[in-house]
Image (tube, rainbow, N blue to C red):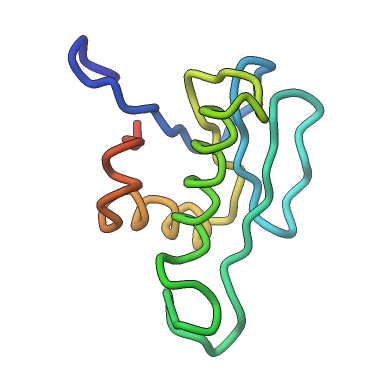
Length: 111
């Protein structure tokens, strides 16, 4: 639950997407019928998380960053929450990005 002073965007995992949410969808998962959705990939097999040839921050941090920029610039509708539709490994990647990436942690918190 978001406290009254925590202005970061909450991230929730699983469930049904709502029209007022942004949805982060792992490759291989079905796109939702409603909400603003963006896909992310766990990276290339055999590559370490954040390897220089894939991405410096990791695919989940990059995708969350893109959602934030699109919200800020009006390219995406305003949303107050991000829903993650992913496998257990994909969810763990998003949780790790929120915990470990300083920019992502400044913008989002996991509920």
